[in-house]
Amino acid sequence: MTVIPGLVRRAAAEAERQLREGVGLLVRLGRDLERSAELGRLLPALTERLKILEDTVRDQDAELRRVRADLDSLVGQLNDRLLPRIDERMDDTERDLAAVATSLIRTGRDTAGNGARLDSAERRIGDLRTKIAQLEQRSGLWRDLQSSMARLGDDLDAMRSRIPLRAADPPTEGTPAPVQNITDRPA
Image (cartoon, rainbow, N blue to C red; front, side, top):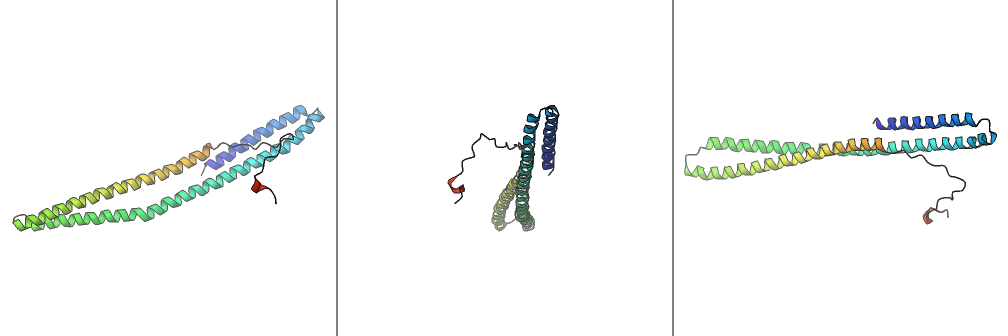
């Protein structure tokens, strides 16, 4: 999964850019002691924001890896359970059809008694052809499902690459603390 390292690189590049801007600001404000003290207070906040951003990216990466593993497991289980049985049924049906066709050739069509058998065999061949068509349709649906699951995995990878990274804003002195739910309050 190459998306997460790319996100981390982008986050690191953004952090480096912000730190460079901070250093440039430090140089410009170095002559003013009051402003230097203010910059000294902002630097730990930026460092904390960077740490929060890294933790968020790490958590998102872990969650997306779990989802991808679950999808891979599901596709593997579906393949193991359904496809072998469908192929076996199609093989059995083809063998039955070949046996019926062979028996028709051997039977011959010259007597009236054989005519009734031929009608029965033709009905059976029609039934077998219907079953083959149904099995082919089901296997086609399964293959469509399988390709949809693969596309879903690719879409997840693409979605992960587009997840916006939100930097956590540090609390300001004038901002009130967030409201807690009744269930979140300490007893």
